[in-house]
Structure formats: structure tokens, C-alpha cells
Image (cartoon, rainbow, N blue to C red; front, side, top):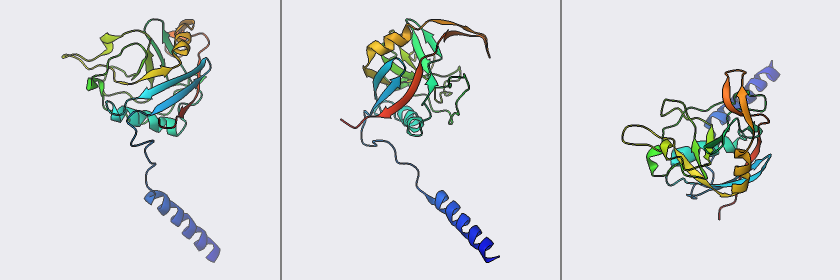
Length: 200
């Protein structure tokens, strides 16, 4: 009986400690332009994030990075001369767990120009969760206007542009399972992991 009570006490103490523990510290909170290295099956891409212009988007992205949630995902949509999109599915096309959707920061003054990274979403302007895409052209039609929301840019490629071009040249087809998607790579490139780089 005493052993059972002691076990319940230890379990209760553990749960209380977990509940009272502070939230994980934000990555490089004083760095307005943190850098990450995306290790892909085609090579490495270094991306500089813009916390000054897209604080909510960068925070959301880094939270996925911190728990390794982008590791071993695929680039599932590739449209040459348009975008390279990933971050949402594993190699079996199983959707990864999503955190709550974030506020659309497309009005931050950053354009969907070549080499930038932005958040993918559906028709609801505030529906972005974890999927991102790289612009492989100047896609100004994805920017906001006075009559519509755009797609929020939150960084740009600073190293590995040739890797991005290699990804963009991947052969694609129509993927009939489960939804008949187009522009799906025959052999989807892998995002092996994302490393946060030391502050400059």
C-alpha cells in the first residue's frame, strides 16, 4: 500500500513539474535573421529567415525545425519555372502532424521573387501550417494586392541556389493516389533534416 502511494506521489510530482515547466526557449531570439541549412538528397540549401518582417511565420517554422518535424519529409510538388514545395508529407505520402494555422503575413513587404521561401496554404488566407515552397521564378502574382491576400514570404536562399535548380528540374507526373495530384516528382527528393546554424 505504501509502495502504491509512493508511486502515485512520484507520478503526480512528475506531471506537476511538466505542467509548470517553462515553454521551450525561442531559437536565437535576438537574431532577426537566423539561418538554417536544409540537408536534402540533392545537396544543401542555406536559407536566411527574416524575423523582422515575418515574426510569426519564422517562429512557427523554427518550432517545427526544433522538434525535427521536417526531417525525412519530401518535396511533393515541383513546377519548373514556378515553385518547389515540401514540408508536409513523409516518403509514403503520409501527411505530417500540423500545428494550428498561423496569421497570414503576406503584407510584410517581401515579394515572392526568385529564391525566396514562403508559406503554402489553401484558399483560406490564414490556413498556412507547415508546408513551404521556394520560388524558382519571380512570382509576383503570389504577392498580395488591394483586393486579395498573398502568400507570406519569410526568407531567401543565400547558399545552394544550384541545388534548388536541381530540385526544380526533377521529373514529375500525375500522382493518382490519393487525390490525383499533378506535378508530383517520380522520385520525390528528400528533405533529410534542417539544422539551425550559429548566429553570424
